[in-house]
Image 1 (spheres, rainbow, N blue to C red):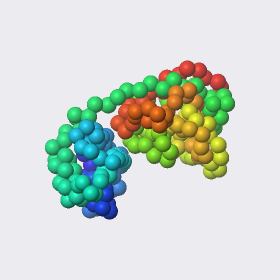
Image 2: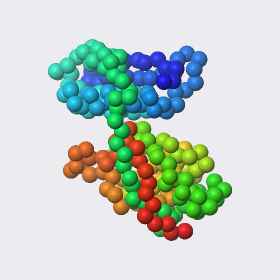
Image 3: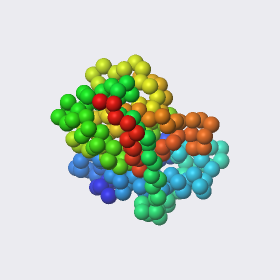
Image 4: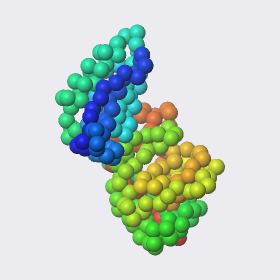
Length: 226
């Protein structure tokens, strides 16, 4: 694991958190799979064994929300510290999910731009993007939007200077060093290279989001429109 201090903190009267912060003099904590796996496993245990109002695993942190009329902040700080000290990162089992993906054309209007920026052919961009397994670090921005790490460095592309007002749901984009899928229609500034017909978020489902923290995602080529 990276050189971090683990802190257990109260956030108001109804939330507590685990925070991993860099030790004095150390660099900013970058995403670390070992650290994240431990956070994801603790999140699973909390869902299975405790009555929580909500559990939010983030990047280098985890926050649990509880009913303050039933439990005290001190009790939850003790629980989180005990779980941190007794949970093994290796006990977290990651799911693997394939995403059927159509690259280019109207579904991927920025594919050519990404290829030019990276000095690659369209075929090389698609090959690199689809052959790489990605890890979901956390959900954010909108319900079901998974921030995924693992994008090959050769595909790193800045976000658009002028974000689109409307990005179709299912659009696959690249933003800096990450890739992601827009679950529903929304504004967005990522470079759009592809599209998937899968439903990424449905509040009627349990869980509502197709992707969750810790999942391993692979993009399966269904078509390329250069």
